[in-house]
Image (cartoon, rainbow, N blue to C red; front, side, top):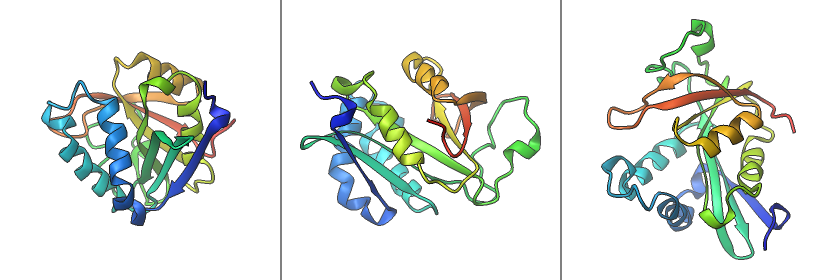
Amino acid sequence: MASPRDLVVATFPSEDLDGKRNVLLDVYEDVYVERLSDPFYSTARYWERLQGYASRDGFALAVGVVGTEPIGYALGYTLPSGSGWWRALKADVDDAELLENGHRTFALTEIMVRKPWRRRGFARQLHDRLLANRNEERATLIVLPGNSPAQAAYASWGWRKIGILRPFDDSPTYDAMVTPLPIAR
């Protein structure tokens, strides 16, 4: 049985997104197989979101492979100056915490691992590789409130919840989390 030591992680810039399309969508469809009939989770809608993320400054993609099989990935981008990321946040935080200047916050927009490799340290490897050597002062992500395994993992990795937000009109409501960078390990 493979362990995180067997994981090979490669990072890619936005220019490589189209070349990784099949890998990314195959993993996505495996992870979200039970939600693909929901328009928000459709493969076409997801690909549109990925293309949007890749158009942002600071975009990065980390793909993990065991042997020859892609088992998961993580990706994100730097929030631009005046970003709308926080516009729907419901939280009791100082307004200064929500200001973006184009280099303050890295948004970890996706992290997913195929089922056979979950809860064995692979997601942490992808997380750490994606966030390693970032120049931003912090990172943010959103996670479904009912996703207890992810919630517990993020908390153990140093993330803290700051509120809830609904990023799209047709999306679920998520918990918004932040962690300082560089990541401590």
